[in-house]
Image (cartoon, rainbow, N blue to C red; front, side, top):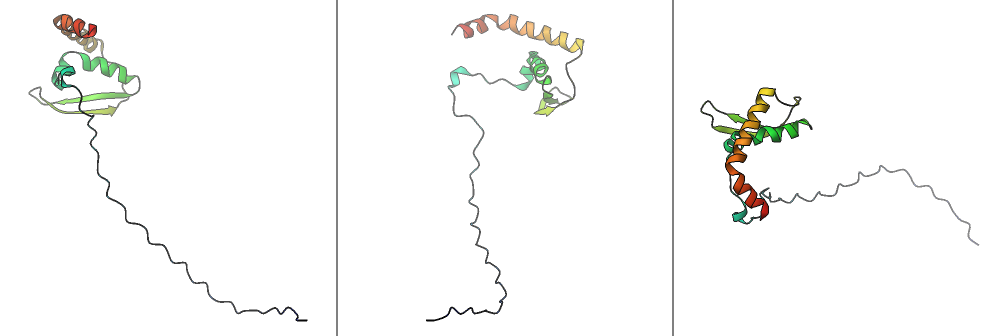
Length: 123
């Protein structure tokens, strides 16, 4: 019968593990954020100036202020819109004068467009 023999091997330095090559990142095409084409007959493009002058900007911002947000419209000296962007704000609400002016503008807009608005709502 053979006896089990225990052999001791000398310690060897561990070889560092080879790093696996990282696959190269694939180029990702940027997708536009534009929506798919919508039926053009359902939309009429308006300017930020028109939106502001109708009084709607203030009312939209009154709602957004609840959440600390605002739509900012930057105008030049000639009342031309040069930038529009969303922003965080610490303000809540508007002055009584600004709000009154917006109510007048919005009322004038509705008075001028009431038939068209009613027809669109019915369609």
